[in-house]
Image (cartoon, rainbow, N blue to C red; front, side, top):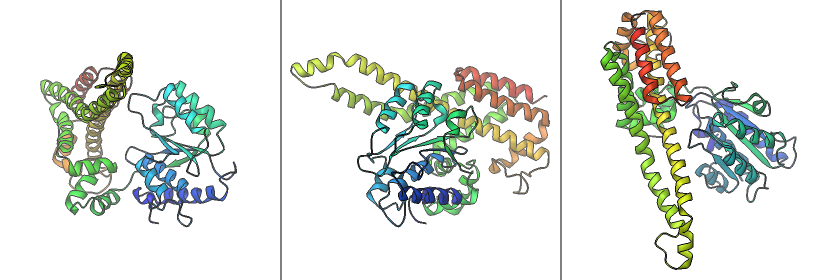
Length: 404
């Protein structure tokens, strides 16, 4: 079925379920029994859980009577573009989603829709809700306004990702990791990439469509992946390992600053204009007197966003490192061969020589300890341990694991 759901990759069952729900919603938008008011979309990174939620929002608002989520009507196009008046996306830019932000969203969501069929709130990365913010959301989910729908996105239904109580109030939709073939097809047909590039990017993306696209089209993304994987080989020489770990931290910081710089500057300019910068007269003078507090609040948000961007970049690198050790472990036990596609699918099929060497040089116990060291580092970063210290500890553990 053509339309907004075409943006999903390898999720045919999910498309069918959401389309049927959108059709059911049309049959009784005013009836509480006709529509589930809270949904939870889960799936691994790159599976498209937030895309699925947004597509469903478009299908709910769609004005095409024959095809919910047609992708052509004004409701669909504005929803997908993020400009629909009755669809709000909560996208965490900092380390978490706080109580203040959630209260503001809930207040707006409690109003009746102004132009659309429903008032829709899409909460991306609901696993970043603070406990207090989650309680604010839970209260409205338990007693939802008649024409309001909440679409939550989280990695899984694990209590660490979403509270048990909040999860129990939601209809669950799980998205699977797209296949390599499905991702490669998207890169060829939608991005116009050649078959070889599309196949390579899909095979090393870990099932993440967006990352496959970046690896295929961005030289810097490829360089960052190469730098992360170089850490594994560097553990054979302690000095080199610590240097490689520091380089990963610096690379993540540089990426975060690069991503944030242009947006930060634009926000500062917009705030300055809103506060009357460049104006004259009594009104302008009065507006600028309270600018210090507003500027401080903006800088706080920008700093939090940059920190989150850097942590996310570093986490991607750590997932690549863990994947290489996992590949070596699979080869060591004969579950996969580094020179073929037999058995377990390798995370880094283009690193066959290094995988084979690692599987030969490090015992299975050492490979398992190495994977655990990477997972411990990720957990340390989530608890706000400084990245430099967390990666130095991980490097020490990886060096020790080589001789385990």
